Amino acid sequence: MSSPASFVTARQAQSSLLTPDDSSPPGSEPEPVSDDFTYHHPQAPLHRPTKPLTYQLRTHSLVYLDGQQYLDGFTLLDSLLVAGNSISTPENPHPALLPPPQYLALASTLIVYPSLTTKAKSFDKQKAANSALHYLRNVSKVVDPSSDALQTAFAFATPGSTRRAGRGRGEDSPDGLGETKLTTNVANAGSIWTRAEDFWHIVGWAFNCSVAYKNRWERWKLWLELMLDFVEADWNKRMPLFSTANSDDHIATLIWRYIASQEPQSRTTRRRILRAILADGTSKAMKEFTEVFKDEAKERKQDEEAVIKVQKPLDIDNDEFGDYDLSEDEDAVMEDTTERASTRPSRKASRQKESSTSSEYSSDEDEDGREARDPVERLGGMDAIKLRQRLLHLLVDVAAATGHLSKAKKMYSPAPFSTADDLFDLYTEFLRPLPTSVFSIFLSTSKLDPSAQARLNTTLLIPLLPANPSEYYPLPDQSQFEEHYLPFAANTHSYGDNAKISLIFESLFIQMMKNNALQPSKELRQAVEEGVAARQAKAYGDARRKQRRESEEAAAKDILKMSQERLLGLVEILELSSDDLPSLPSNASTPRGVNQAISSPLSSAISDHDIDAMEH
Image 1 (cartoon, one colour):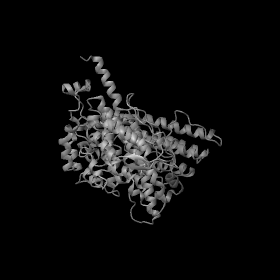
Image 2 (tube, rainbow, N blue to C red; image 1 turned 30 degrees about the vertical axis):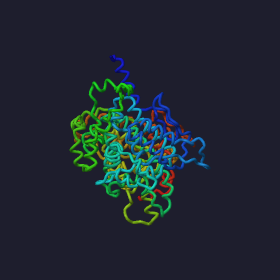
Image 3 (tube, rainbow, N blue to C red; image 1 turned 135 degrees about the vertical axis):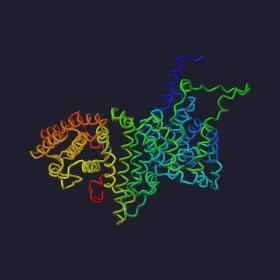
Image 4 (tube, rainbow, N blue to C red; image 1 turned 30 degrees about the horizontal axis):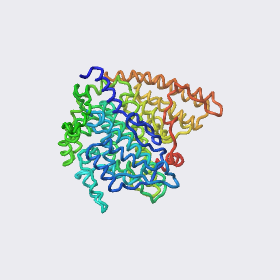
């Protein structure tokens, strides 16, 4: 009989398996998910050409995967993928063996599949999900990110059709590939690529989980990190081609396909994308971005939570078949996935149907209980914030590149997605109303390139500043900064609005210092001091705000005070500096978008040709 201590040990082991240690960045070798689980690791992030598996190897893999022996199946596929990696060189690349796209799509589904992760009843099932994750991580390091196989594997089903039926037609080739098509439910109607409405549905649900369902977030975080690795690598691979007027390569990228799943030029589409990226577990966000798998967020019963089933021994002579006679993975969701495969529900219908998942987040809690929460946790933690910022950065790159391409082609129709300036307007619409503490987090963790961050900063100022500044300078020089920005307070008496202005000025000031665009002067100090005094005098609280927002204003008051002090400190640093800019104090609120942004070819083009590329 199991003791209480064994229950604790089982739960600890389960938690460690749900979040594998394989968290290495792209380009490094992932660690095994457990001591008894051995993989073949790529030695270098060298993209190699690929060739399909032979019929015999496909059949062998099919037996494993259709038999739900995922651990063995993906261990085999991983070995085939990395075979010859040690002898492959850029001059003489050795082809990597890659299975059909459906097998890759299955792997991506298993990473978050509830019965193999948060609802798994055995360690081996959890290892199976981690083996799929490990395999796809190796694929991201070995296979060219623009590979047709990846483009097909990571495509969503179109409304009114089944994803796998369409893919099956492509696999019925003369070499017999259609005979090795996976037939299990999880590889077809139960696939994430069929169940989810589109990429942004998954993004919104994942970020809802980061706040509301931490257990599920541990898996969705892994999936989203991996998919962004693929999406960013694919975009960066094709991005240099955008400089030519005849290139339409952006149409083939994964990110463009996800954007274009709805009407890409529609502001409604862009607003939904932003709502997905900023989803925060509130009742409104939960209703719009519902769970992907039926009841996936529902907690297991306490007795199931306490004991993880130990695999039974296999003894055929005594009719002991271990776990091979069990098929709960497929049967548990068959009824639901059959319904979803036959008719994809409308967004409105799905919100009504699954709104119960957010019952614990009432409107009162949205407004009251969340006010006192740590701002980082309100966004799901630092891992969620980093992923949100990666997506915001990627959208800016897409907008700038496609807008610049339209100008190069002398197209006078609207940009394929959005101009960068229009996108910054949309960012402002969503970011400006955030509580000051949350606004500060977004500003300080930005991954935008310096020129793009400067444009976003000045766009954020537009609705906050009074009407007095008659000129708008997206990339101000020192005199413009002194005259049209620094001396002013917000156009309201809110501590929050005045604190946001001060935070934005900090970001601009630091960036201009790093670009040697500021020189110590009497006029600069005077402008900063006038602005500090103006905001101190203007901010005394907004009587129009509901009483339940008093805690937010109190927090904003403290943020304003600290930001003003840092801004004055930056002036002193500048005045004490010589030709070289000294290091900033460790307690300075240094926006990450300034300190850690790495310029890409596209961002350099934006900086050099900001008016054309940004369509100002």
